[in-house]
Image (cartoon, rainbow, N blue to C red; front, side, top):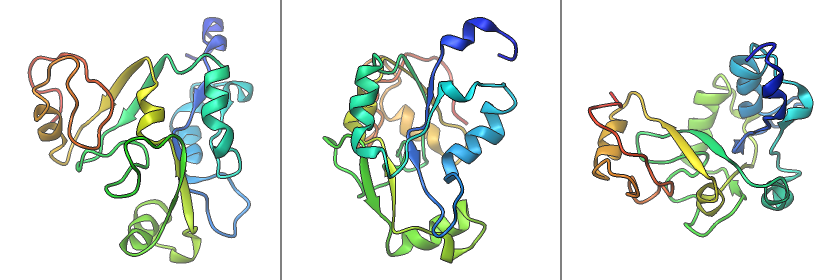
Length: 180
């Protein structure tokens, strides 16, 4: 992607974000995207569109005005979740929503995303809900590790099937075991 002028037309959006409480820095998702993809690929800043708690209410409208999403690359959780749509956090008809962080989720986020620092865990995070994700044109779902292949295989692996109760995107046909 580096140095390829035709990629200048591609725009990138994060689908969820967990801010750091009391810190004036970018959130977990955009920080990881910068480190792992945007910076090494030399993506121009004007092509990066950050979802935050501050702009969440306008996010779906902005995506629509930009022509929608042509391709979404999503990770699929072992429990079938995508984006920040963890079990019992969003409803199927939700668009981009703010999700409260409470109970066991506090320690989960602290340990998985914030180096164990519970004081950095915010009161909420933002995610594209199932309805927003379902508006994407095409999907690539990364489902490596942790028994995730069982969730995809439960759908029968046929085009147009849905992979579990929480997964709203249609999956493409596949042969063999892509997810191990």
